[in-house]
Image (cartoon, rainbow, N blue to C red; front, side, top):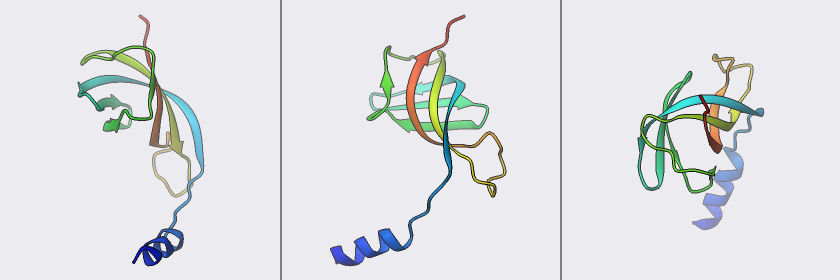
Length: 93
C-alpha cells in the first residue's frame, strides 16, 4: 500500500512557476497555530508552523507578507496565487 501511495505522489505531481513577492494585508483572525489574512487576493488562512515572524500579530494589524506565489500563464489572476506564506512583518504607518 505504501508503495502504491508513493507511485501516486510521483505520477500526479503538479509543478508551478513561482516567485517571491511582498504583499500587504490585514490580520482578520489569529489563533495559536493559524492566522487569517485579508489581501488583494481575498481571505486566506495559513498555518504558522513554518512562518518566520519577529512580532506577535493581532486582529486588525496591518502586515507585510513575504510569499511564494504561482505565476503560470493559465492562472487568471496576474498577481499570482499565494502558495506559501514565508514571513510576516509589521507594517509601519
